[in-house]
Image 1 (cartoon, helix red, strand yellow):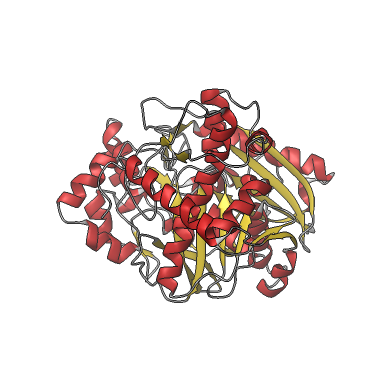
Image 2: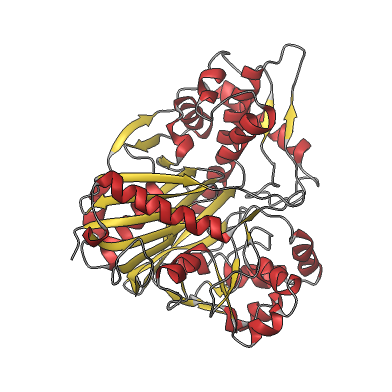
Length: 497
């Protein structure tokens, strides 16, 4: 049996693989990007073939970087972009349509129609989620309606739905396993949150045939073994699966009730461990499964900002004011402040706590003296301020302020962003030595699922690199928040409630 863990971190813009030792040391890492497709305004798609090729190449690159062979892998952990939706032929494994990405807004009208029918309250009660195009359920129905004959084939059991974890497991096992872990299932609008089972009423409401759904499994258990993957030997256990944000929560060792983290990736995602009861948010957050280990389910409150790092990518690709994402900090530091410029990065609507599908990005406070540096700084501040809104909602639901915030994701390496985050949120921000907590979390779950380590020992994998303490005077903080609230109001499609 091998002695290392392979973590597959399949994200929105690329796939990363990590080879990790049982004590948490990363031996090798490799990332492979793939194209995004935007067929219409507000629509976002991925080619499933591109996703799978990137996973293969990432795994091969990580093994090569670690100087180990496939035979050295003891278990595989998978973490993934969550709500992104695929439907494929069970026999051929060929997708019937491109993957519809979590950012895609094409089913916003369908969600609005369900709201007009009075379905929203019941869906929220059962799932812990808001009725929004972000989640998978309406995407599945759209694909089945779009492709001729697909709905009849789905009802006959010929087609398989899956989030990206399901697709990767199917590919790794030559189609023998059709599973999804409970964290990903909790993001579909189709799972009863309390029972952690597919719900017939929800499926009927969203017009999704139950025959198309995968089996729900735990987050740390052997659910399948590799077969015919080519780049890996047969028989390696797939022992850990969790959606990217839940994997990051686990990877940040947020095992105690009240522990919280924020991941700064394409979007920004804040989660707080709330223990064994799925308490519904009263502040615009969603309730989700954090993980299920040994038959015991842990829940989390989550707030999602759809655009974070993607705003920096827009500055790079759309406006051309930076050549690389990492250049934004240097540019932003050329000015001491944004001089009243605010950027609300609602480029795909506003997520929690507003849930405004029609909101659009807004830049306010521009004057003749505004420069690219002011816009760069306002972009970083906008990311931190939208996260502040999530943390404020969490504190309200929890009935207490956060003691600390652990951070990860690519943008967490930006010192200016992290310090501003600590300042506007008035909370200590802790950054680990390795900011890829999603991949580390997947590796930790695989180790636990394969019986190679315990949860308590997995926590030792986390090592902190730096803590950012709040340093902004109260009046300055209040001014930033007031300016931000005004900018958000201008970006919204409807008045604040």
